[in-house]
Image (cartoon, rainbow, N blue to C red; front, top):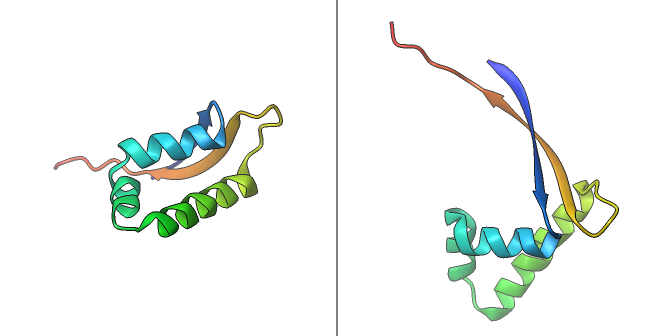
Length: 75
């Protein structure tokens, strides 16, 4: 197992939410399952979460993240 890092970089937090809302299956399905008020609340929650971790200071979005890479080899 190797610890890795990835930085999410988008034009803005709104751009990130838009891209994930349209193209990332789990987020796309979550928005589809909600009425307009629920969709607005989810978007607000995502923006708040991004705001907690966004290190960009110029209006763009830069959110560092960590993950573990696990490689399985067949014997």
